[in-house]
Image (cartoon, rainbow, N blue to C red; front, side, top):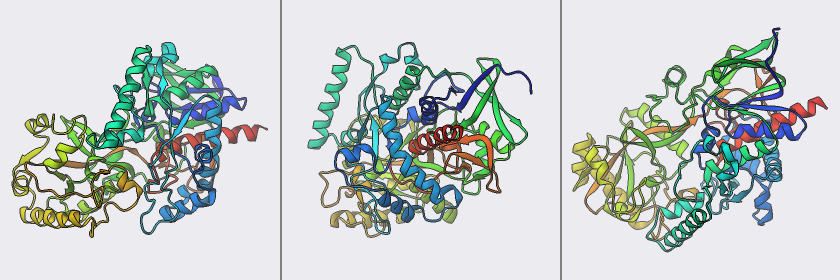
Length: 555
């Protein structure tokens, strides 16, 4: 074997939540190195809400919120069912057990969290599913002063809330600004943001805060982090991965990884070739609809496949109903869950609960399109009650949306039939759907899709809307139609791994020296999304488990 340019015990590819593995390895006495292909630290984690789904976590325990290992595993059993080896009993148990341990560890490293109150599991209180937590198993990072990072401050990928310091639960309340709780929340957020500026701080929140806190912990431990350093080759000796070739700012560096290489480089949401190769049977694929980070191009997944790695669920993603704002994807998750809104296909028919998990919403859109050819695009229909009450995207109630109408991103008409004509929707179908939905809204019960059932359905509803916070009539002109496509926040299928994060071959044997976690792997949750922060959680937990494994094996 040729000479090495650099040696470390544990090489982590990708700088999102998977970099927790490097932090843990270093704490256990191992040297570690994080390499990131882009010029910013944080990956998709930095662009996310920064929420981490961890059952029976320390914050729940301190606040007296009831949960248990058994309840969490039963919830996953009822939700995921038999999804194959990617979601084996051992992997689920590792997630629950080591997830809680990981939070204790991160807190000891200065990564501070808050519990996300009222953010229930996505299927809590929904018929057919057991032991979902109505109180929620999600936590998020405390707001962080980015100036603490010094020269590294501008090197972290920006989050989605660059102006206001909004916690995740506060964001839901600020979307209903005319309510009492909305007004109180807005005052609190504004005061916090203003105080930070007065103090000369650069306060960040959500995923940006989580990325900053992890990076701050890595820097304190003097763990090297290389940006602009894509991996171009895995180095294999016999049947073992022993290192990688890293293009560090244009210089090829051969990195020896004595204990292992951990892939946490994300999925392939921005690789149209791979998406069409592995998922075209699902329906139309696009690398334009995705809100994932720019580095999710999948080449490291293919390197692992060439090394013998097995894969699963390459046709799956963390789907997100999306509308296009001047050609850029914008999430439509929250607006469609509120009263005075429905989503229909071009037949004018509703076909799913608009307030369900966004991953399931995307699955329903694709399934409907395969059935009828009429669901991509779908159309969110809102009336002026919705526009006058709620925030939509960056626009406050009643203002700002005309730019989208003028650009053709939205259609506007005085009647639903007028919208139907502009959008190519069946007018009779839409008329009948609106009339039927209005009846449900007045009664407070969605007889077709049970919108408003369960904690998550109500989380983004309107607390002042009665008798159902998710239902309200569509009857006040003008009406608006917003085309909806099945966007995503990243792919969720990929390399098969075991409970230690070791990458597996098709015969179930592990490839020595190769580990993986996060969106480059087949999800431990199968084709379901159990609660807010499951994606970030899976990346961090199995990176943590991999670090534990290499340290234990060394002992």
